Length: 205
Image 1 (cartoon, rainbow, N blue to C red):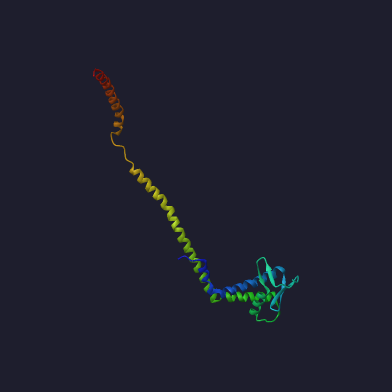
Image 2: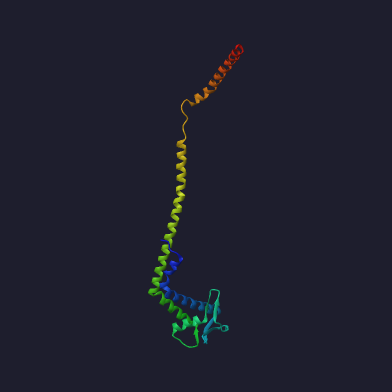
Protein backbone atom coordinates (compact mmCIF):
# COMPACT_ATOMS: atom_id res chain seq x y z
CA UNK A 1 0.00 0.00 0.00
CA UNK A 2 1.41 3.36 -1.04
CA UNK A 3 1.41 6.11 1.61
CA UNK A 4 1.33 9.82 0.84
CA UNK A 5 3.13 12.61 2.75
CA UNK A 6 -0.24 13.71 4.17
CA UNK A 7 -0.96 10.24 5.54
CA UNK A 8 2.51 9.92 7.02
CA UNK A 9 2.25 13.32 8.70
CA UNK A 10 -1.21 12.45 9.99
CA UNK A 11 0.21 9.46 11.84
CA UNK A 12 2.33 11.85 13.94
CA UNK A 13 -0.60 13.93 15.22
CA UNK A 14 -0.95 11.64 18.22
CA UNK A 15 2.63 12.51 19.21
CA UNK A 16 2.36 16.32 19.11
CA UNK A 17 2.84 16.68 22.87
CA UNK A 18 6.16 14.87 22.75
CA UNK A 19 7.23 16.84 19.67
CA UNK A 20 6.40 20.12 21.42
CA UNK A 21 8.49 19.09 24.44
CA UNK A 22 11.42 18.32 22.15
CA UNK A 23 10.99 21.69 20.44
CA UNK A 24 11.03 23.49 23.81
CA UNK A 25 14.28 21.80 24.82
CA UNK A 26 15.86 22.67 21.49
CA UNK A 27 14.95 26.33 21.99
CA UNK A 28 16.58 26.31 25.43
CA UNK A 29 19.64 24.68 23.87
CA UNK A 30 19.76 27.59 21.43
CA UNK A 31 19.78 30.03 24.38
CA UNK A 32 22.61 28.02 25.93
CA UNK A 33 24.58 28.13 22.68
CA UNK A 34 24.28 31.92 22.35
CA UNK A 35 25.27 32.49 25.98
CA UNK A 36 28.27 30.15 25.63
CA UNK A 37 29.50 31.89 22.50
CA UNK A 38 29.10 35.32 24.10
CA UNK A 39 30.40 34.10 27.48
CA UNK A 40 27.24 35.36 29.17
CA UNK A 41 26.41 34.40 32.75
CA UNK A 42 22.84 35.64 33.17
CA UNK A 43 19.71 35.85 31.04
CA UNK A 44 17.44 38.65 32.21
CA UNK A 45 13.78 38.57 31.15
CA UNK A 46 11.29 41.39 31.52
CA UNK A 47 7.61 41.21 30.68
CA UNK A 48 5.63 44.36 30.06
CA UNK A 49 2.10 44.64 28.66
CA UNK A 50 2.15 41.11 27.25
CA UNK A 51 5.53 41.47 25.55
CA UNK A 52 8.76 40.00 26.88
CA UNK A 53 12.34 41.09 26.31
CA UNK A 54 15.65 39.34 26.89
CA UNK A 55 18.99 40.85 27.89
CA UNK A 56 22.14 38.75 28.11
CA UNK A 57 24.65 39.78 30.77
CA UNK A 58 28.28 38.70 30.66
CA UNK A 59 31.37 40.06 29.02
CA UNK A 60 29.01 42.49 27.33
CA UNK A 61 25.46 43.61 28.08
CA UNK A 62 23.15 43.04 25.14
CA UNK A 63 20.30 45.50 24.59
CA UNK A 64 16.79 44.19 25.42
CA UNK A 65 15.31 42.27 22.51
CA UNK A 66 12.05 40.46 21.92
CA UNK A 67 13.79 37.94 19.67
CA UNK A 68 16.88 35.79 20.17
CA UNK A 69 18.51 35.45 16.77
CA UNK A 70 21.35 33.13 15.81
CA UNK A 71 22.57 31.40 12.66
CA UNK A 72 21.22 28.15 14.14
CA UNK A 73 17.69 29.52 14.56
CA UNK A 74 15.40 32.12 16.11
CA UNK A 75 13.16 32.08 19.16
CA UNK A 76 11.11 34.73 20.91
CA UNK A 77 11.94 35.93 24.41
CA UNK A 78 8.34 35.24 25.48
CA UNK A 79 8.66 31.56 24.54
CA UNK A 80 11.97 31.17 26.39
CA UNK A 81 10.59 32.88 29.49
CA UNK A 82 7.49 30.69 29.49
CA UNK A 83 9.53 27.49 29.17
CA UNK A 84 11.98 28.47 31.93
CA UNK A 85 9.23 29.55 34.30
CA UNK A 86 7.22 26.38 33.69
CA UNK A 87 10.23 24.14 34.28
CA UNK A 88 11.58 26.03 37.31
CA UNK A 89 8.36 27.19 38.94
CA UNK A 90 9.75 30.74 39.17
CA UNK A 91 7.16 33.41 38.45
CA UNK A 92 7.29 37.16 37.97
CA UNK A 93 7.49 39.86 35.32
CA UNK A 94 11.23 40.36 35.81
CA UNK A 95 13.22 37.16 36.20
CA UNK A 96 16.91 36.33 35.84
CA UNK A 97 18.30 32.86 35.16
CA UNK A 98 21.97 32.01 35.45
CA UNK A 99 23.73 29.84 32.89
CA UNK A 100 23.98 27.09 35.53
CA UNK A 101 20.22 27.19 36.17
CA UNK A 102 19.47 27.01 32.45
CA UNK A 103 21.84 24.04 32.02
CA UNK A 104 20.17 22.19 34.91
CA UNK A 105 16.70 22.84 33.46
CA UNK A 106 17.80 21.58 30.03
CA UNK A 107 19.27 18.39 31.51
CA UNK A 108 16.16 17.69 33.60
CA UNK A 109 13.76 18.29 30.69
CA UNK A 110 15.87 16.12 28.36
CA UNK A 111 15.93 13.26 30.86
CA UNK A 112 12.17 13.54 31.37
CA UNK A 113 11.55 13.21 27.63
CA UNK A 114 13.99 10.32 27.19
CA UNK A 115 12.30 8.31 29.96
CA UNK A 116 8.75 9.04 28.81
CA UNK A 117 6.40 6.58 27.15
CA UNK A 118 5.53 9.28 24.65
CA UNK A 119 9.04 9.24 23.19
CA UNK A 120 8.95 5.44 22.93
CA UNK A 121 5.67 5.59 21.02
CA UNK A 122 6.99 8.34 18.76
CA UNK A 123 10.12 6.33 18.02
CA UNK A 124 8.03 3.24 17.15
CA UNK A 125 5.84 5.33 14.82
CA UNK A 126 8.87 6.78 13.05
CA UNK A 127 10.45 3.34 12.62
CA UNK A 128 7.17 2.07 11.17
CA UNK A 129 7.10 4.90 8.64
CA UNK A 130 10.71 4.22 7.64
CA UNK A 131 9.93 0.54 7.13
CA UNK A 132 6.94 1.33 4.91
CA UNK A 133 9.02 3.72 2.81
CA UNK A 134 11.72 1.08 2.35
CA UNK A 135 9.11 -1.46 1.22
CA UNK A 136 7.73 1.06 -1.29
CA UNK A 137 11.22 1.66 -2.67
CA UNK A 138 11.84 -2.08 -3.08
CA UNK A 139 8.49 -2.69 -4.79
CA UNK A 140 9.07 0.21 -7.19
CA UNK A 141 12.54 -1.03 -8.16
CA UNK A 142 11.58 -4.69 -8.80
CA UNK A 143 9.34 -4.12 -11.89
CA UNK A 144 12.01 -1.96 -13.50
CA UNK A 145 14.65 -4.63 -12.91
CA UNK A 146 12.37 -7.31 -14.38
CA UNK A 147 11.79 -5.24 -17.51
CA UNK A 148 15.52 -4.80 -17.98
CA UNK A 149 16.21 -8.53 -17.77
CA UNK A 150 13.34 -9.67 -20.00
CA UNK A 151 14.09 -7.38 -22.94
CA UNK A 152 17.27 -9.24 -24.00
CA UNK A 153 15.48 -12.59 -23.63
CA UNK A 154 12.65 -11.52 -25.94
CA UNK A 155 15.10 -10.18 -28.47
CA UNK A 156 17.11 -13.39 -28.33
CA UNK A 157 13.94 -15.45 -28.83
CA UNK A 158 12.94 -13.33 -31.82
CA UNK A 159 16.38 -13.73 -33.36
CA UNK A 160 16.28 -17.49 -32.89
CA UNK A 161 12.80 -17.64 -34.44
CA UNK A 162 13.91 -15.61 -37.45
CA UNK A 163 16.93 -17.79 -38.07
CA UNK A 164 14.81 -20.93 -37.72
CA UNK A 165 12.24 -19.69 -40.24
CA UNK A 166 14.76 -19.07 -43.01
CA UNK A 167 14.47 -21.92 -45.58
CA UNK A 168 17.55 -23.99 -46.38
CA UNK A 169 18.53 -24.28 -50.02
CA UNK A 170 17.19 -27.50 -51.62
CA UNK A 171 19.57 -30.14 -52.80
CA UNK A 172 20.48 -29.82 -56.45
CA UNK A 173 19.43 -26.20 -56.63
CA UNK A 174 22.98 -25.14 -57.44
CA UNK A 175 23.10 -27.71 -60.24
CA UNK A 176 19.80 -26.38 -61.60
CA UNK A 177 21.14 -22.84 -61.49
CA UNK A 178 24.28 -23.97 -63.31
CA UNK A 179 22.21 -25.74 -65.98
CA UNK A 180 19.91 -22.76 -66.47
CA UNK A 181 22.25 -20.83 -68.79
CA UNK A 182 22.79 -23.91 -70.95
CA UNK A 183 19.01 -24.46 -71.32
CA UNK A 184 18.51 -20.83 -72.11
CA UNK A 185 21.17 -20.87 -74.82
CA UNK A 186 19.70 -24.08 -76.29
CA UNK A 187 16.24 -22.60 -76.46
CA UNK A 188 17.63 -19.45 -78.05
CA UNK A 189 19.43 -21.58 -80.64
CA UNK A 190 16.27 -23.40 -81.57
CA UNK A 191 14.41 -20.11 -82.02
CA UNK A 192 17.20 -18.77 -84.22
CA UNK A 193 17.21 -22.00 -86.26
CA UNK A 194 13.47 -21.81 -86.80
CA UNK A 195 13.54 -18.15 -87.76
CA UNK A 196 14.84 -18.49 -91.36
CA UNK A 197 12.49 -21.33 -92.09
CA UNK A 198 9.60 -19.21 -91.10
CA UNK A 199 10.79 -16.36 -93.29
CA UNK A 200 11.32 -18.64 -96.34
CA UNK A 201 7.89 -20.14 -95.82
CA UNK A 202 6.35 -16.72 -95.97
CA UNK A 203 8.32 -15.89 -99.13
CA UNK A 204 7.00 -19.05 -100.92
CA UNK A 205 3.53 -18.19 -99.88
